[in-house]
Length: 372
Image (cartoon, rainbow, N blue to C red; front, side, top):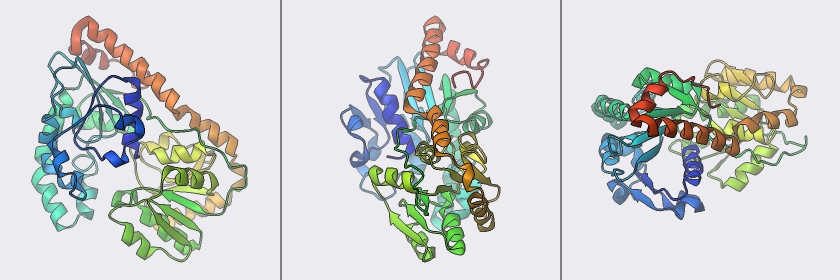
């Protein structure tokens, strides 16, 4: 499962009797716990056979979200990276939103998506972006309390929606076996193969330096990545969680060249005792300690990635697996559950006293790190 689905699974486990509403469900990709739950989907589910449906359905996402009716519930919790927060609720209900990011392709990363899109993609963004921004902004105003998965996302929520939030990092499976200092010589990328992840930088840098690299993941750029990979690079495509965990434990370091809202994979690598070489932007700034659990580079160009790899190799004695693994424990599933339930109880206390408006008022003065 991807990060958003993993977070949903943990949130759902905290509210065992609650139904789950979603725009679209890929049943074969859900974990066993979610498959056992009552799941209600929007009318987009009828088009689930269409490849890459979520991107192609961009113009109608808001309408699909509004087709979901949760007005029978007093409390609705949204796990959102798009517009599920537009789900219909009663005005007197408490709507909370765990936000992975405001929609990247219409807000902060619009220019990047537009620059890399093909002709059809650019035309689609031009036609629907302004309307989607209005719909997304309006949906956000119906949320009584936002939770951001990082300070980076908290800044986006303030900038795009004009609303405060508290920060609670997402749940990461930190129960990963640490391979005693017998790690192998290969570097590792685990990523969806889409443009903003910048997997091309890792591939080109390792090809230039003749360093062994393993790339795990699939996506629209899979063939492009395979084509540009040199003899030292192996592209495995999609692999199951067991294979990924094994590779994380054995790699020399994880390469992370994109800008992410939070970035679960770098935390998973650290949980296995392995350091991270990352682009200094987004949520990874909050999860990797420079020259303690990893190395940063400051520009998304091959020269900077190659330089970071060589700096990393020149300081091999710094990377103590036990210390790296200990650092990662602050992002564990148990830590997330404790933080989120404290926030939920804080909201419920104010909701019972004065309804959702009382929660909104209290959010204006709460420190965003109050529940970390």
